[in-house]
Image 1 (cartoon, rainbow, N blue to C red):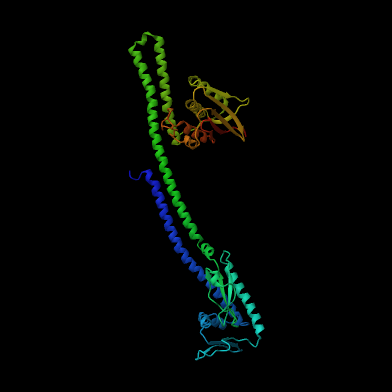
Image 2: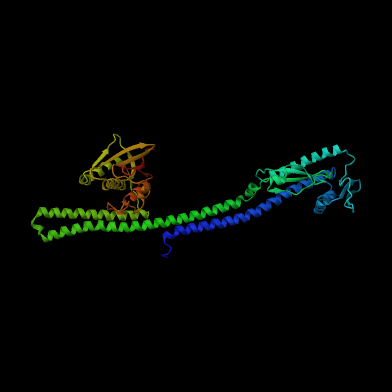
Length: 484
């Protein structure tokens, strides 16, 4: 699918995420409206239940556990009748309520009367049973019932799981005028419950007022919001991983092509050199000139060894990637390895007119490792420093220990490595381009990848400290050998 190239994936991912976000917002908005209605229903039910409970307590004192009282005064039909009785307000209507309890029966009377002539007025619109109590005693009892009612409502609100800012408003039962609380027109609350009586004294009616219900609604929606957020994050993470994977595959493909090109060039060079040497031996009859013949044979032998080294390097890397490499651990002093490697690099160092300095230590540093692979690691790091550093450069090799770990430093004063490449240089086939997108130094892109793999197989790690134009310092960290 050529049309689905990597350049289309990012805008496609962005469009998909935007559409998903819009759909989630639309869904959350609908859910919010539904949840807001559910919260309003819950708050209304809290006030209604509190009114039912406190009113029942005032009616059935001493008879709270009576099954007959519960069946009647706690039934939905009675509550609906009471609410309708309270809500019926017309001009010149007088409502009267009375209940009485005897040993064998209870009497509940509701009476409403109105004058046919609208010009006439009742002296009192509504009355209720007072049991012979004075108006002061009735008012005190009403205040006590109000406190119980408000306390019951607050207790139920506290059980909702989030603090709710609330207040209440009182209305005169007869006139319907507000007698306590702020005017709702000025407050503009998010929720105002219906008006409920809280006893049978018919003094006032209670209304719950909640200025803001947004946080309560959001709290009730918390699981939906978390799941929606997680779904968006997972979708974004999936697209990010896909884009990154495609980018890495593209870089890997480009690096593989570059590797093939570089390795072809590297293999052609020794083959061409050997071909020219053999042709010269035959063409110029160098059999009669032993010195020249030996020189050309040595050149051919050296090129064959270099060709074999490159082939072995690729084969070893392949085996290591497949996990088929078996390490042969032995105990040795790392400084002996460093001395041997630096001696073998003398020709390359002189050819580059560079300075290779090994800072020895008086005490040995023993490690248990694969001698050949560790030697190759050191060789690769020194060879890289020589290839990428300018002529007359200086390379310092030193060892140090800390916390039962051995640190081997390979420090050069070359061009350094930009921070954006410092993690990628250890990837397979990766090589740094110059400004013209050209490799200035020929290579396979396997050296540092091999270094990292070998060191990690030994339980160690590789650190790179470098700044552009200030050289590089590769530090190999390996566990020190300690006798138990």
